[in-house]
Length: 429
Image 1 (cartoon, rainbow, N blue to C red):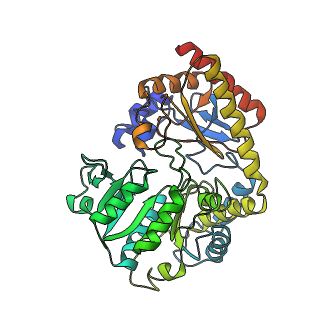
Image 2: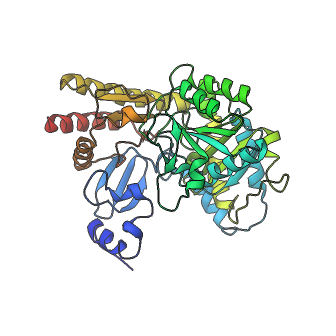
Image 3: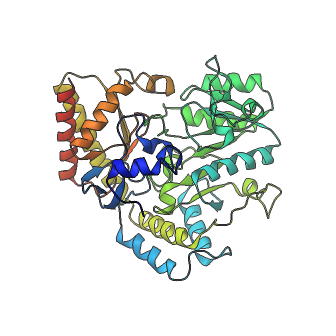
């Protein structure tokens, strides 16, 4: 058994785990220093192995919308575990959560449970290709859809271009079927379609991106995509792994009243357990095996423990819609406090905010896409991150990750976050 402080644990982990972590951003490479090893979490707080306590604004990258160690979800998990951890066979709870998702998410008529957001997006693309009989997809720069080969594509030399592999191990053949366009630019989408007539199976994007920081769709952008897809027989896929059940009961599609053909889900849908899902129109979802010819399977899909946690989470959100007003109010309070700090300190950094998601960008430019997000001073963000950590506030260890607020953040904690922000920014300038 390995014991010790965070630094010792990290050094030990590096001997047995690539880079010492099981997901790259956890290594703190983007912000400097060594990662903290977490021992426990409750409500709004994380506790590391060195007995430090932090107010945290990641919430396991989104799922913990009710805060950590929620009693209702813990109870549901404990009860489920008593009946065994896995069956590899159908359970009643799978049908119950599927019905709840269909009732909550406007676009979903049928849904298939999987084990991660990456599985959900990979499967959604395959179904779209099978349904349309076309091969190419359009991906939006700066949107992250997991580590499937089709999504690890970087932009080429032009603003609108065929992609090139962004990771060794992704073939050029895969890359040629993934086309890239900037976020918030309908014209680039139209140009790609004109250059690839009758070849585009799907357009996939985060309706509110969270992986280039929080970036908002401009008025008419999402509805414009919907119109283009209708005209060109293209499947519109909203990746709502982050935004699903976070921005509203029905996700971003409910908030913006734009209904995709397929929606991918994760994070909140599992209440903290590993889970994902993809769903949409019946006519598309009926292409999925065993109903249809598009194969997708998973030994642990519909895992009874994950279904118990997810159902309990979604049922609570469905029955308590006032939570979204509460989250908006406390997040707005924090954002307004930070904006006042910037004004006092004569700083012109940009803040993007929607619902319980927000990002402080270390740039004076308005952030509307990946190019403008990349104007941020990442070295300065790294310093900001480390100093906030010293103040007892745990942020996402990357300029390009949105923050998530939970219902566990009280006004008093919000005021502490704002005060820490002021002291840190003041000490940096």
